[in-house]
Image (cartoon, rainbow, N blue to C red; front, side, top):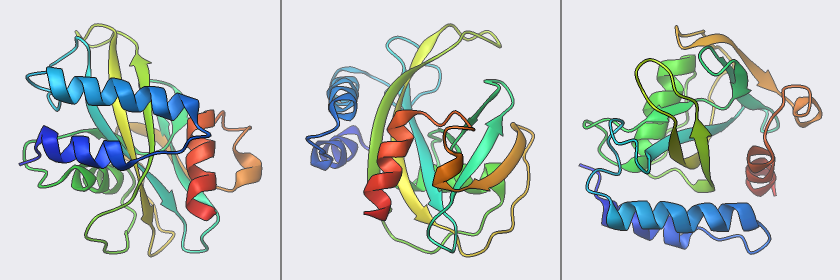
Length: 181
């Protein structure tokens, strides 16, 4: 079972003094973990809940995995909600990446936290507008084979020169630079 104290320690350890947006998100995530009775519950909408995503590098080490999210109608890295059966917080990201893309991931006991981002999710399907307090983990693909899940319209590998064309947000670009540095 994932415990808020363990996740708080991981989030506290993340720091990039040049990334003010991630530092602000870190404070919001820590506050959620400290003050919320259900920070991992997707049914908690005020002030939101923890989600996990994966920044997956292709086997060549240069391109990243993107999904065209069906509901949000935009290109994102794969990820989603924490589930009760996830043993550790990084396992939630790994599970979501595999469910959404079918990609094979290199085994790693504890994936590295490479980004933090708190962002709004529009109201839909009986859920009000709420915040996702997102933890972004780094993974490495073992092969390029992919599949499209019902949550997505498309899945692809994207090189840095394509980030702008796919509307990749700045927080993901900064995380990519951390990973390849």
